[in-house]
Image (cartoon, rainbow, N blue to C red; front, side, top):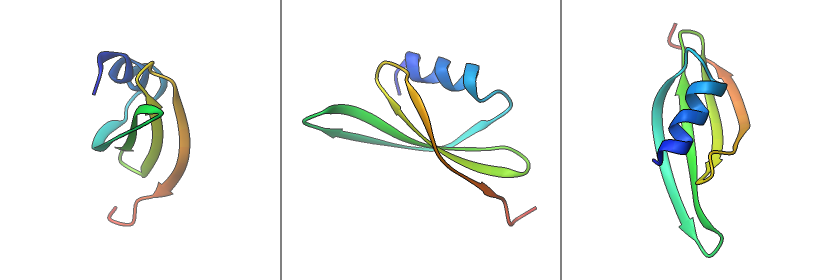
Length: 64
């Protein structure tokens, strides 16, 4: 994952931990499907190489 994406996550999702990353490359470029977590939620976001992020969904954790 590029530094621009890591810094965007750090700035926009403070207190969240990266739980998983899927890199998707196609004719439109490289994008990232990222799962973040904290003590109460799982958060799915999309990001591109430039570090632009978009919230996809937010779930309450069932294991807590």
